[in-house]
Length: 67
Image 1 (cartoon, rainbow, N blue to C red):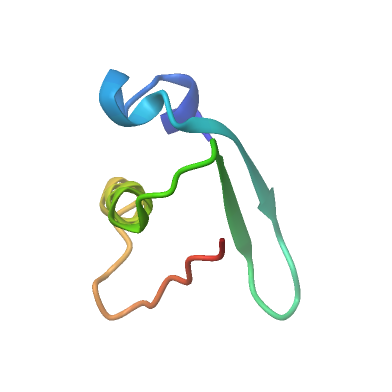
Image 2: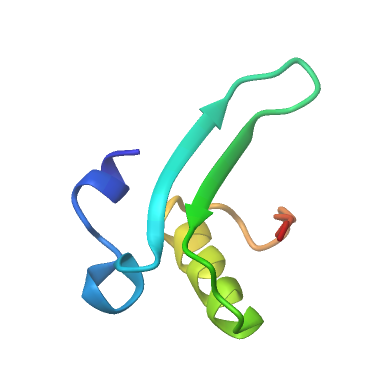
């Protein structure tokens, strides 16, 4: 969450981020990143991959993008 507050995504990608929610669940934790309406799926993937990199999530861990 502090990554979002500190605007670590920069002005280019940070302008698309509206908010985030963290849910700790028994079945698995969830991080939801709320984005403005974006028609470019590659841009959505870029934001997700940058978040994964910033959180040091290993490449063998799958993340799911929901639209």
